Image (cartoon, rainbow, N blue to C red; front, side, top):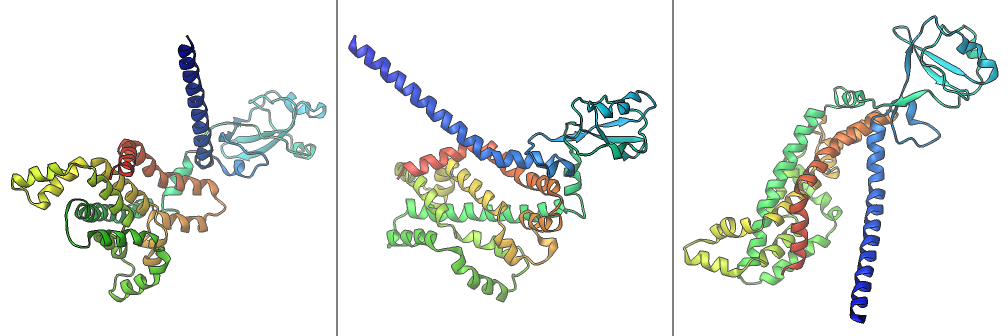
Length: 358
C-alpha cells in the first residue's frame, strides 16, 4: 500500500514539475516574441498611430464617412459634452473624425459649421477602427525607397555561395579528422579549435589589405571565396563529432568492396549525417543572410548592397517613417523564419546528437 502511495506521489511531483517547466517555457517564448510582434504590428500602422501616449498593439485605421445633409443635431449637442468632433477634410468629399465626448458619435454626419473647430478644446481619443495598412509594405519595398529585388539577388548570391562552400569544405575537413588516421591529427584538430577563440577583429585589417591588394574590393569574392577553405572551426567541430558517432565498420565494409575514401565520404558518411549537414547549412544561411559587417567593409557600390546593408541605409533615409522601416525589416526576416520552420527537425536533431556522440 505504501509503495502505491509513493508511486502516486512521485507521479504527482513529476506532473507538477512538468507543468512548471511548460509555464516557464511559454513565458520565456512570449517574452522573446514581444519585439517581433511589436515589429509586425508597427509595420501595419499609419503615422498617426505611431507616436501615441499609450502603447497600442493592434493596428487601427481612421474611420472615413461620407458627409451628408442629415442629422445636424450631432453638432448641436456639443454644449452638453455628449459629442465632441474634430474633423479633417479628405478628398472626394470625405472626412476623418476624432471624437472627444463621452459617447461615440454616429458614423453618418452632417455638414460641419465653419466655427465647429473653435468649440473644441482638447483631443482625448481618435475615432478609429481595427485595421491594417498593407500599403506600407508596397511603399517600403518599391524603388526608389528600397530596391528589394536587387538587394535580394545580391544577398542570395553571397549566402548560397558561402553556404555551399562551408558545407563542402567543413565536411571534408571533419571527415578527415573523424575517419582517417594521419600523423599529428590531434594537434592539428586542437589548432582548428583554437581558431574559434581568435576574435574576428584581430584579422579584419590584414584580410582587408590582402583583398584590396588582389583587387577583390567592391566584389562578392571576399564574402564567398574564404568559405571554400573551411574557415569555420565550429562547423568542423560539429560535423566531426557527428561523423565519429557513425560506426567504423561501415567504412571497412565499403573498403572491402573497393570504395575509396572519397566514395566513403559522399556515399556512406554524408547520407548518414543529413541532420548535422542540415544544421551547418541552417547556421551558415542565417549567418550570411544577416551579415552586416562583411558587406559594410568590402562592398562600396550601392548596386552591390545586401539586404542588411540596404536596410541600414534605409533607416538613415526614413528614420521618421518607422512603419516603413518595420515593414522592410519584417520582409528581410521572413526567409529565416520560413527556413527554420521547415528544417527545425533536422536542426534540433543535429545539434543534440552532435553534442552527445563522440
